[in-house]
Each structure stands twice: as structure tokens, then as C-alpha cells.
Length: 349
Image 1 (tube, rainbow, N blue to C red):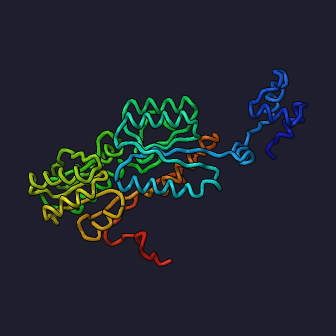
Image 2: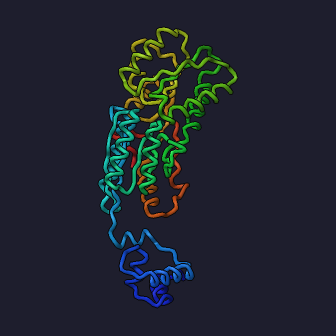
Image 3: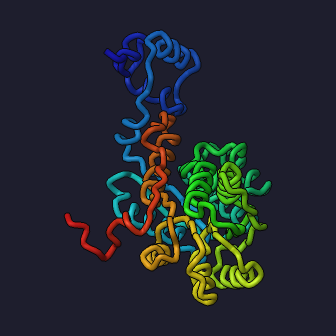
């Protein structure tokens, strides 16, 4: 049997109240008595069940999600999942809040992290921008003892506690493999539409994509990256200019959230002969898949990511291990023929 607080009290020859004070590092215990209790804990091999202790004390975990603002459909879906999880937060002893900052703005993101630290939250989940000021802010959270996880886009080497998201290099390789297979022997270059190369997930997707394309039997040029800042209007302009300048364009890899502008540019140019691989199943990409404008969509489950971030932050706050298999985020591939039922469609259940 696992040793209990009663065993500690008996071994140390003290009261249960004294054991509780030592375990919770509260004052009112003489040094010699504290040493006896700590010796008993070591001799018995007692390991405290932090989660059970927190449950008994009805501890509530305030967790903050810091997300990019704007009309990025995936990010808005992520925010909706946080708010949906918040409906059940009381029963799960969490209090969830969302802070939005301008997309790709490292200074604003660092300031939001500092704001969460000042509020002494139990955990922070953040869509990271790869910049020194953000890494420094993550370090301040670590120094304050506040767990921090990166969400969707990682910031490796920053001291963050965990990354919640897909393997973005593998996602890029998957896109490159699909592009190469779909194009076959057709000649012509491929364009890449990104949000910003300041975020690691976009850089890693590009890395994987280029590596996979280089292994294809037919060599083809990958054009310089178009950074649309995940803004529909800017993405539309950039893609329209590309289509006009490169009449033999064979494919487009949209590795960010500029899909609405991309689809509009293809419609403007009356181009239905271009292979398009995109990310995230949203209302726009679903419609484009159904219309044949987009050939395949790589999707990550926003709901799973939010639930995973909550589980990881609570585990870190309690000093408990993270179950890696449970937190692994799957990458799904959708084409026109295997689209799941939409939010307003009957799923047959």
C-alpha cells in the first residue's frame, strides 16, 4: 500500500495538522519538527497526489489562450473551441479566457504574455511568433513558475513546456508528395502562398514541401514565397500578380490562411487548371474542394488542440506527467470525395 499522511504522522510522532503544514509549506512549524516530518516522508517514500489535493481544496485553474486577431478562419475556429471548452470549465475546475493580439506582431505577443504573468494565471497557451522578444517573455513565464505551451506554431528552445500541434515538417512533406503525384509529368513551376515566414509552422511546412518536391521524378521550380500575412485582400493581389506573371503556373501550395484570397484570384483569372494544396478545413476551403478549385486540404483538429493544451497545462501546474500518446495531434487529408459532414449537415447519427 502507498504510504499516507497518517503514516507520516505516526513515523514522525506529530499531528496530522503538522504534517499538512509541512506538505503545504505553511509557517508555524519549528525547524526540528519540520526536519522530522521531512525525514519520515523520505523514509516512507511518500509521493503526494497533487491532483487529489487540489480537488479536495476545489482549486480552480485560470488558463489564458493568446491567439492572433483578424479573420483567419482557423484561428477563429480555435477561439470558438476555447469558448466552447469554457462552457464546461466549472466542472473541470478551469477558468478559460482568450486574449487576441495582431497577427505576427512579436511585440504585442510578448506584452500579452507579460500581462498573463502579472495576473498570476495557472497556465498560458500561445500561438507563437519566432522572435527574440517572444522567447524572452516565455522565459519570464518559466521563471515565474507558470507553465506555457505553444499552440499550432512552436518556439523550440525558448523554455516552453510543451508544443500542441501537428508535425509541420511532415505536413509540408505530405503536401509536396500530393502536389508531385497530382501534377505527374505536367511541366511548370509551383507557387507558395504563406502568411509570414516569421512563424515556425510556415517555415517548417515550406521546408518539408521543398524536400518532398525535390524527390519527385519531374524536377520543377518552386517560386519565391508570397507572404500574404493571412490577409484575404493582400493574398488575392499577390496571387493575381503571380498568375499574370507566370502563365504556365502548374500548382499552388497555400501553407497559411490566405485561401479566401487565393480562390478569388483563381476565379478572377479564370484558372481552373492549377493544382492547389491548402491547409485547414474551413467554410472557404470546403466550398473550394467541392467546386474543384482546391485539390486537397491538410487539416488539424482545433478542438483536440484546445483540449490537449488544457490537459497539458493542468498536468504541468500539478507537476504530473503528460501522456504523450493522448496529446499527439493527427494530420487529416481531405479531398472532394471524403469530406466529412459540415456543421449544418446531417452526419447520419
